[in-house]
Amino acid sequence: MADAPWSLIVHGGARTIAPDLMDANRAGCRAAAEAGAAVLRAGGSAVQAVRIAVCHLEDNDIFNAGPGSIGNAAGDIEMDAGIMDGRTLDIGAVAAVRRLYNPIEAATALLAAEPILLVGDGAERFALSRGIPRASAPFKARASGITGHDTVGCVARDQEGHLAAGTSTGGIANTLPGRVGDAPLPGCGFYAEDAIGAVSLSGDGEAIARTLLGARVVRAMESWPASDAAKTIVAPMQRLGAEAGVIAIDAAGRIGFEHTSEHFAVAFIDSASAGATAVVQHGELEGPEHGG
Image (cartoon, rainbow, N blue to C red; front, top):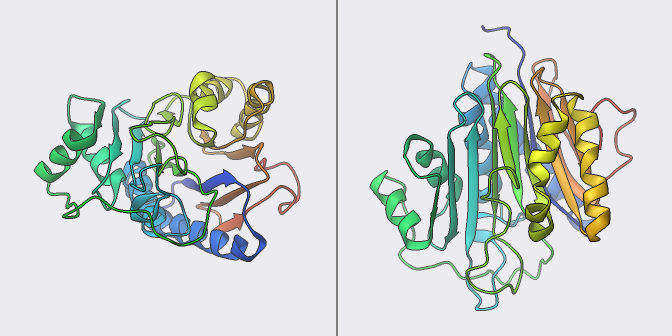
């Protein structure tokens, strides 16, 4: 299987990015994509590639995920993450966790457990039982002066043709404590099914959840390639006056992405590429091959 095709795409959030932060967003997404690609290139699974790529994004405080997340109205960080194995349809998700360095690690550990979603202290206790460390105290929002961040995510197809998708977020700035958006909800912020495709989303979480936006794009991939299916986010978001972005890979390994926000930090790579390509807005790529 050493020469079998694989593909991967990551995102750093559908939002407005200040001009002086665009290069950092591109670089952060590119590094995460390259890290996930190294797993796939070596014959690793799509699930592990997604886990590694999302961990890189969580560790980079230019993005709203992990300990660098935006704070809620109480000044606390509450993080959500979800991952899905397209081969088995196993799902793992955590929500409102406050002390996990990499929430996607806990979500990945849940793939082998009976529950689909754990929240708060229960999720953190489960993570500890699986050897995943947590901080001694809840994280506090960093005074970085950077606002408007959003969700991160990854979609991958491995050399065996299996798909996976993962999403992680720190939520919305100054939101009510305990708020959970679309990121840990399958069919909303993420979804993967080998025979169809996989997606990870970002944007206005309540609008994404109300429209089951992830499921809509996956359903569209039953008939269309990923680049066309990704465009189906536009009408529902226009109806609600909301912003969203989606990354997608279909069952054939084709990559697509689309966004209704001003910017969408994305990087993608496949087995035919010399390296990852990173963009933050429409018009940076020529032609319709990848969408966006």
